[in-house]
Length: 316
Ligand SMILES: [Zn+2]
Image (cartoon, rainbow, N blue to C red; front, side, top):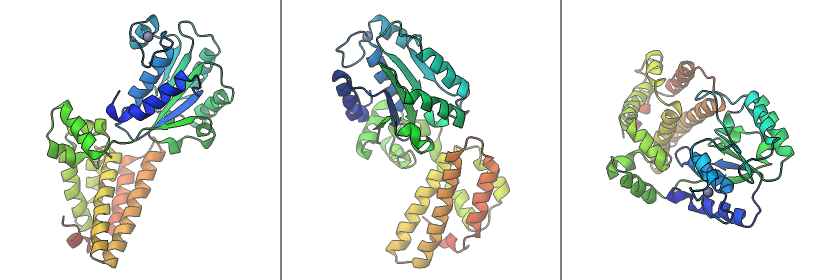
């Protein structure tokens, strides 16, 4: 278990000890907090044959089956391909299996991850399952975008949220993993939203270099000197959520600077740009089938429409 998960873990253990585990949990938090790992640990504990264990023993038949990925009473539902939707057929298979009695453990468990990747039909099918919960079943929906889940599903789940640890804790933990120095970790921290695993993931793909390039590109764009078509081709190679989260941070900084200098015109322009960025992030988050290049081009064109006077203000 990661050090920033202890509160949620203890809460879960307490519920188990008191025999008041919910039928369904939605486990939320930004990417990079180890939600899946925690969900696995929760399931392993519930399935473990040691009744009073406060963590899975790792020794019993059930624990061995779970570690090997072969536990007959556990079902993992993921998109068949990364980034694709979870289909209704997958939820139907889950329903069929839920109708059978458990074989090894006293419990039956399910993890759906990422749960916000279910299509409408899959959501509806899952809802029916949630409406008729069976005894001794635990379903964990893992999601970094719970706002994409229907309220009808959310209202039937207990919410367990992971949050990013304090910056110092995050930096310290990342340092312990080795590979990167303190200054590098601190630089990427805001882009990773303070999530330690995300920090490492971003640093491993050399995101700092990408960010530096983005800063240059964005400045050129606001000066009206960029070609949105060729620039969009470059940007579409990157993780768009990362790109626009970074631009959001950049503009936030400029808004604060303008407001400190009581520069109302500057501040207003940045707010308009900020709204453009938020709208783009919403579009990216709401669909799996976006035309990336078109979306970036549209954003760039509306950003360029902003007054070209940005150039002086954007010098950092
Ligand atoms: Zn065990």
